[in-house]
Length: 269
Length: 204
Image 1 (cartoon, rainbow over the protein chains, first blue to last red):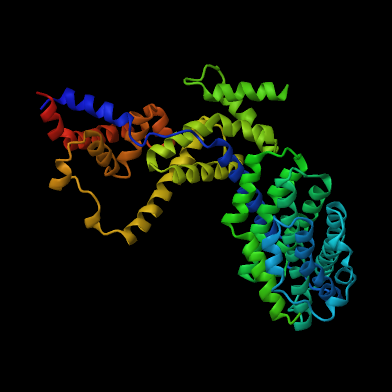
Image 2: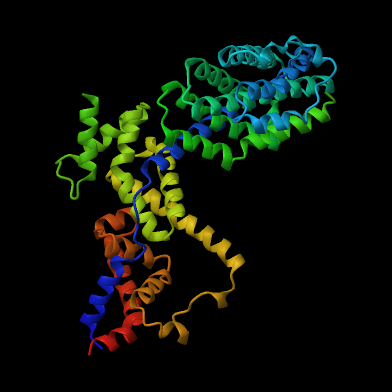
């Protein structure tokens, strides 16, 4: 036995120990940024007060809920191939009799509307929901605390459901537009509005439900990526892959559809 | 102008050894920009250190996913705690302290999970006859390195595999330089024992 020989073998063999490949710089950076954003939101959420519900908004939210149910169909008509899963899901959702009377469901013009006008219409509807949701938060912040009434809770759930339905529509529209290279400022600002509402809801009573909390956090992450992509408008396929990866690995679309569907039924709408 | 300055910082941090006479000053400049939430500076800090950290994480884990996870977590923690960086050590050493801690804690969790799914009998042992006569030196050495204790393995990997100095290792692990040297000595001794039968065959 020869100590020098052993040291030589040791030195040679050690160099190959767990030999690393190329460094996935961009992938790791994207995840670091996304994680830091999500953590920042959570930290902000912890410092905020829980918000109160504004009962009168509930009725309006119930009516607007129908918009989300028809959104998938509208997107599907504008882009049959990309929106097929959404349409399939939406067929399972039955709009409430009241909500079926809303203007959006009465207008068959969406079937022939151009992509731009369709997105514009959807955006306007989700913007109304978002505005009400923000009003809710602002009002609740001013309240003195205490447990909300059952009616108030229902109203609040409906606002959240409406937002989720709108978010699903936006993500579907984004996927369609991105894969066609049709990203524009309208989608960018739409996604920003929805991200803002998502973050507001993350600081609300919605997060008392752990499932909803996780869904909103996932939605926040995906929305933030979409905002960045849509705003820069680079049509970078790697960034798009990362967004798709986030949507897929977190099962965002499935969770959105499942939540809207289940809670829609539970709320009796 | 800013980009040019950031590049200087990045290059300085990448260089081994650092050619700049005032690396700590550059560290502080970079850190202060990051604390001001300058995204260019944050990216520069990341670019300056990510390769070396990822390599170390990979060497310690042997798994690309774990290496990426630990590297990411290290940077996330570093950005969160950047206000605690006082410049007593270099930024690289400070980052390595975080990274090694993340990796060791992460590996403990991984081992606990593995322990639930594997029995001891399933794991290769240096003393089993089957393993002794595999005839594959590298496989034997690598298994022996894997089997080193939690105190010895990081020192051996950092020094003999990745080429860190004892000063860097001591700074990263929070131990005296003498302890780093002693642990390396112990690690080599254990590996020599594991390689002895193989060296005997070849040394003729």
